Amino acid sequence: MPIEITMPALSPTMEEGKLAKWHVKEGDSVSSGDVIAEIETDKATMEVEAVDEGKIGKIMVAEGTDNVKVNAVIAVLLQEGEDASAIGAGGDKPAQAPKAPGAEAAKADAGTVMRADAATQTAPTAKADPAPVAKSDSPTKAEGGKIFASPLARRLAKEAGIDVSTIAGSGPKGRVVKSDVEAAKSGKGATKPAAATAAAGAAPATGMSKNRVIALYEEGSYELVPNDGMRKVVAARLTESKQTVPHFYLTLDCKIDALLAAREQINASAPKSKEGKPAFKLSVNDFVMKARAVALQRVPAANATRAGDSILYHKRSDVAVAVSVPGGLFTPVVKSCDTKTLREISEEVKDLAGRARNKKLAPHEYQGGASSVSNLGMFGIKEFAAVINPPHGTIPAVGVGEERVYPENGQIKIGQFMTVTLSCDHRAVDGALGAEVLGVFKGLIENPVMMLA
Picture (cartoon, rainbow, N blue to C red):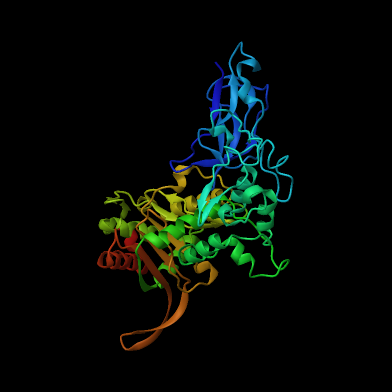
């Protein structure tokens, strides 16, 4: 029997991904462990290996196809003695990659429509019905009645991030067709009054719809760039966080003169290569990561995340660090951060951040953790409040180190200070507990030698 190669789940939450690249073609022989494809999710690009040996009999999903569902058949592997006839009539064509905006995406609305998620159905490909209003066009309910749309129109609307129920159809019986979606994408399309009213009513929770925003601006005065998978996930997760997690914020100033002196002394002691390049160079953020991890160990009740009707109290201090990447944000996790030296933390953060920017992190490297660290000090930001990254219970937001005047024993002095704001999930870390762990963090930052005690 031919062996079906399916879309792997690269993380527990993955539902779909993009088949970014094939490393094999039909007719190629492969062995167990050979890399056959690259799968791209919102967070990473991972390689897919063959688990059996045989010959690639049919590629079911074309290179570049987006939104391929987990467990969808992406290729068929023939075993020894089998030929293409063993695959069956269902695998005549691979699912086609979506074409660029503005290009002809299919033959016609009433013709055959190849969908990126076709492999999730019983047959490897899905065909549109010949009639304009067909069985596959199950109407979706909207305010005031039912909305009919062709499969192609639905797919194009989904790719453009447009709710098809907001588009006024020009086809038979008000059917939404390809031209209606393209008009909506350009901002010229008509919207149904009922749908527009519903969108307006939902504005406080979800924001203005795409079409309503576009309508405010003169055509040609902007460039419309659809959100990629990462940006969509970041937007959805952080919107959910602000709407469902009861945030509260605690702010204090940390005097960092001793930290800066220790950092300078440690960096000066770093061995140098023949070219004079130091073996390592610690940053202020490395001290912040260490202090955060140690503080969670000293106040273990704050090393917590909420899990439904329970709370997880973590034994390790796994601390994530926010890394800005083009199009979004990664939070790779430094595991057992409290047990690592400053140099080890520095090297690990640099490695994780570098691979995050290239989307080369494995899922276990950016999942988990009880807390994150967000540091915008390098951009000169004095103070800010970070959004909690679920399921984390807390996240400190670190501002820039700067000279400030302060009183001490009746005298006016000048020192280096940075402002830190701790965001807490009140369901897992309440006010007094948040204040306690932030106070311990402050003590470690102001007396960095205590991180080693």
